[in-house]
Length: 117
Image (cartoon, rainbow, N blue to C red; front, top):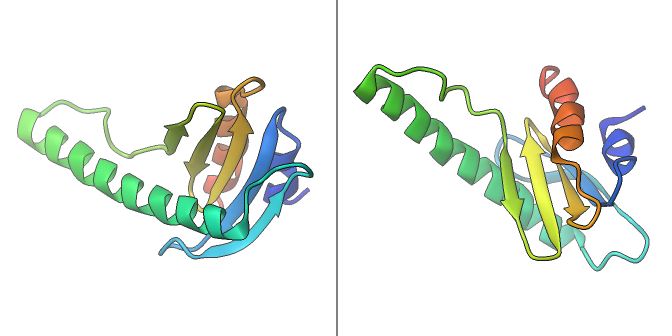
């Protein structure tokens, strides 16, 4: 099963997508009835890349400055919205309806593919 199919099989999945290192959308699927578009997913992909880069910089800086560990590497990013949330890790992301979102399940699927990136 492809990563897109695996992510779309999650409860409440409204969309699943893959993206490049620079955030360019490379593949996606949107569930029937969702108002998400390829343009919105492309924006989310760019946001994931940017936020993970910033979080990585902060985590590494914090570890160096304090001597404390466990902040790096960053394992993903979640954007929580009012009706839906987006979860990303590696080169993939999924948009979940909040009324059915299981973030741990989403990260489990994303983690299983992130190790192949």
